[in-house]
Length: 122
Image (cartoon, rainbow, N blue to C red):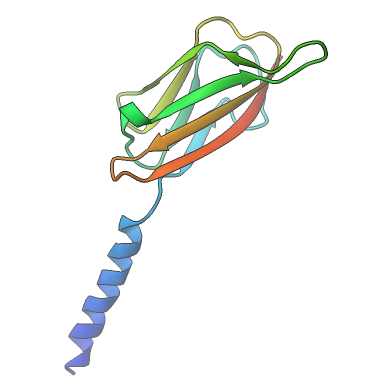
């Protein structure tokens, strides 16, 4: 009988330790990965945890095409009011082509995560 409280406490400790060590995950992106869309005014990346604004950014790059090298697009990245959505706003309208979003974030518990995905503007 003395083991039961110990086992319950040990199980709870392991369960909570795993949750505390979880990294933020990209839940959704708009435009979605590999989507073909009309010219978006913004790109929105929603994460599973709140982010630190000073360390959470994204770059938007237009893929290389015949006669043109890949080109980083002027844009700004800022957190939405919910603290979990990174909003990338291009400085101008996006031309037709393939784009890559390279993001790097830091959650409020200081976990760093980075990733990328691509979409096409028609």
